[in-house]
Image (cartoon, rainbow, N blue to C red; front, side, top):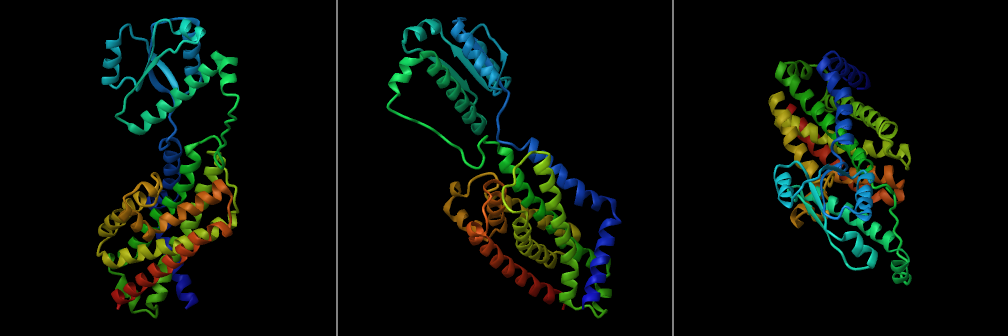
Length: 370
């Protein structure tokens, strides 16, 4: 049995590496995906195109503008001469944010008289608008406190307000996204390799030749899934290396635990790929079925949006997704440095789900070959 499985595994590797497009898919595509998610798919908002309408033109108003620009969040791109131009610039999409500083802003601030600053934000992109408003509020609040000096300090002396952010103190969304990319790349790569390798044999007519050999269905299944699993481990190592040393994403937990959990995760992924291979007659069908499963799996995993915000019925459906559990594991290892004592519920759930999926797929695989 060992020799037959080994020869079949070698055959799969030879077939995979002799096609240049497959090599690009296995090694170049994961890096491209990592770069896209690391640089583009980020929830950090910087260099917000901003309209400044300063009616005061005092030292105080110029200081506020300086703080806004030096924060790195806002870029003053337009200084209109009237309020009408503000609407036109936002309507045309040339600016996301508009700040209007009224007359006598500096005088009122010195006297301690309440003064107003109008902030207009384009709410078309609600997430970006909320972040921009939070940035403006924070900068203006800090500026107001500094200008009012001791009077504000005396009013707040009875309150000692301190905040701390654990695990990701700089609130870099890249630290949150990059570990999740590892889970996505492993799933996509292994699904495509496993589902299409079996269908390919059937499509080119070599499946019948394999079945007349002494190879049993379980040996054929192992020969098809082991190479995909090995490549999944390699892609995990590749993306982890570039995530840590290129994007400076911290990994506080144990590398060995990450490898162990990846192996448990692969049980489910390879099982799903095997199942897709049993319901597909052509490679095109296998590819379509893979993406039909992959896209909803991302949405239901909590990769970009919290599961708690989903409708209740979909929250229950997420328990069937192996990606949900592995995302918690990989982010816990990278950012929190937690171990098995904390992650064991997710590891156990992933193991049970993986065994169930792999067993079901193996039974259907044997039945299909039979």
